[in-house]
Length: 109
Length: 116
Image (cartoon, rainbow over all chains, first blue to last red; front, side, top):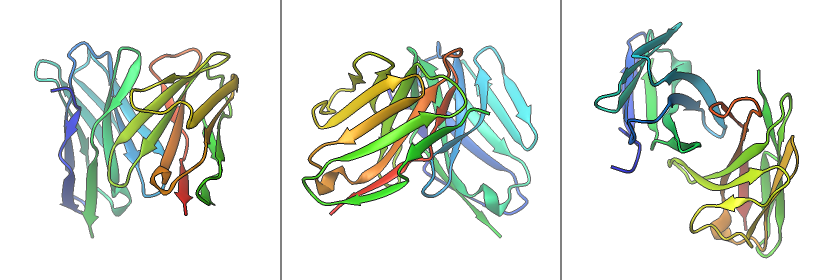
C-alpha cells in the first residue's frame, strides 16, 4: 500500500509491556522513526533506527525492524501512565518524512 | 538538543481575517522547514516545504494563495492563513531540518487555530 499503517488503539495495564506495530511502504527507506504526541502538543522524537539494523534498544524502548516484511515495532517496557499518548511511526524516503496514522496508547492504572 | 518553537500556541480569529504563525529553530540553522496540518485524531498532513531564500513547495491540494509561507532566514519560517474560514480551524505544526543532517527533523509544539 501507499500509506504507513498502524493500528488505531492499544490499551495496556500499568507495569505491562506495550507493543505498537507499524507497516511502512518502501523497503528502500533509509531511516524509520517513532514519535510521541501528547494531547495538544507537538511531536517528540523517541527513537529512530537505520535500515541496516534489526534492533535498537534505548532504556525502556526497543525498536524491532523487519525489512523484508516492512514491519517496524516499538516495545515499551514497564509501561507507565505517563506513556499514554499517540505514537506515530514515520519513514524517511525521497528526502521526506511520511507518517503513519498514529496509535493511541491508553495505560490503565 | 535541537529546539523548535512556534508562536502563538493558540489563536482565535474571526472569519475573513488573516493569521500569521511563526516557526523558529532556536539552536540550529534550518535550511528547510516543513508545515503540517493535523485534524483531530488524525495523522499529520504535509502542507508545504519551505526552503530558506526560495519559494515554498506546496503539496497537491494546498492553496498557495491561502497559505502563504515565507522562509526569510535560516531560523525563521512563517505561515500566514489568509482570509481564514472556520474550515481552516486546525492544529498547525512546523518542523525544521538541521542544516547538517537531512534525516533529523525536529518539531515545534504546534499552534491551535480556531476561526469563528
